[in-house]
Length: 143
Image (cartoon, rainbow, N blue to C red; front, side, top):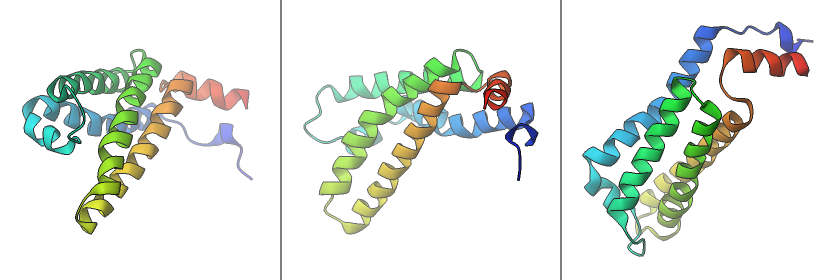
């Protein structure tokens, strides 16, 4: 009924979508440096070098988000976010989802766990097609 190449595409929607997607990572990345105790509390006791991992993950998260937001090597930025999201989703949210004492905490962590996988999917999509308007048009025209 609808042909994909006839669906609306606009550079403003592309820019707004990049802003929406990266805003979570930008805010979270900043708080990796401004609220280290919060992130220390999230990590399981068995994780070594917690403060170093918090700082490194904050850098990776900010770099990936900025690369996507400004469409500068956005596909690499997507890989950086995947690199950030996989261990956070599995180790932090997965652990708490399974072992938290309170049921409400387990339920919240399950939501974060599922959100993490959805964000990994979005970041993986960016690794494959990028975010530029030209990349969107060329993919539509090929199909």
